[in-house]
Amino acid sequence: MKELDIVSLLKKTEELRALFVLGQRVIPFLEEIFLFIQELTPQLAKISRSIEENLQNIPNASKQLEQVTKATEMATTEILNTLEGITYKASVIQANAREIQALIDRQEASRKQVIYRIQRLIDEGNPAADELREIKTVLQRMDVHTQVQKATEEAANLMESISNDATQIMMTLQVQDITAQQLAAVNHLIEETQKQLRSIVERFYTRGLDKLLDDLDVEVRQKSEQQPTEKAKVTKLHREIAFDEEAIVGLEEGGKHRQQMVEELMEQFERGGLSEAASTESKEEASSGAESDQTQAASAQPAESQTTEAPPVSEQPGSESSSPSQEDDAKKPIAQDDINALFD
Amino acid sequence: MRFLVVDDSPTMRRIVINALRSFGYDDIVEAADGQEALQKLESEGNIDFVITDWNMPNMTGLELTKAIRSHPKFSNLPILMVTTRGLKEDILQALQARVNNYIVKPFTPNILKEKIEKILAKLQAQA
Image 1: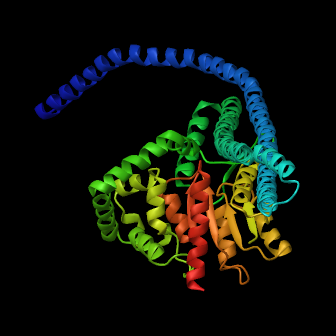
Image 2: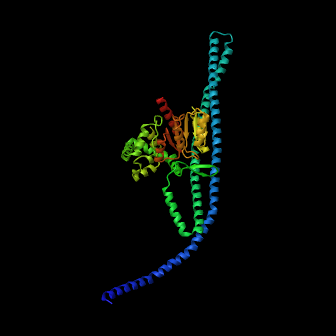
């Protein structure tokens, strides 16, 4: 045996020894992993049983949402009925008040005419001048025109104010539609979660953990590749409700908050800040191409004068090149003032 | 002036209709989604103005707008979109579909009146 072979053999032996040493160290660790997996499987089974139990409660949650949506819609309908009644009654009273006003104006003209004629008879030396003077005094005391006119005018104005209040309350009831959309979004989420969990539990039992994880991997990939659809998301509560998950943004932007935003924008506008912001945006969009072209084309050509339909942003060349900040910008809620600027 | 109010929410339809009545417009037809709106356009006839929501089952307001714009008889109908969708990308989509104007819910009667009058004034100026 050559000296070289012996050296090589010793080296191999040393490597083998090192491998055994490593094995001795690794085996307990592998045993631990094995034990962990052994323990994990019943735990997963437990979790899946717990999920199954919770799944039984989900239909109840959906039912409760359905009841809430139905109840608020019914209550809103009742309020609207009452408000429409108030508006109608107020308009009738208002019309009557105006009629009374016209009537009292005519009566006043007649009263003045009679007083004038009596005065003429007295002036012409009528033998019943004393009696005529008495009648004239009575007629002069019958001057209620000013008071009646004031009262009817006040009543008409009050009725108009009540009508305006009723309209204001009606407009506030938009919140019912917005909250219904929010509840519909929550219901949709609950139903989707229920569907997914049920499918996971079923596959855990029938296909095993490995296959289940592979399946989930594929599903997540498929979902991320899904193209956005033009169809509205719809869920079934007491009726089919199409919803916008972002509807709450509209709600937050509404009322006082929106008004505040408008005031702030007005202030900025007066200081010249808003116009500067608008011009910066248009410069950015001009350099990005498609979106700006579309915006400019749309604002330059209002709907009334457009003859051809522009392709969707997603189909336009260069539309994918928009920067993340511009994409974020597109996802931002926009104030009514800015919408107005787009259409003006 | 005959209006077509399209919204899947009965509450919203009543609110818009009441607002229109308070402006003096009494001739109003309603529909619960885009499909019904198209049927009403055909069956009712003489619709002069469409006020539509965006999110609706069966056919959205955006799809309705596109259908109207590509319809030989109704392509020039004024369309006002009234929706909870207030993102810039939504408004750009609506512009592409050629709506005449856009209101984000919740809205005030004044803004509705203002938008209707603006659209009608523009149309009159072009006529």
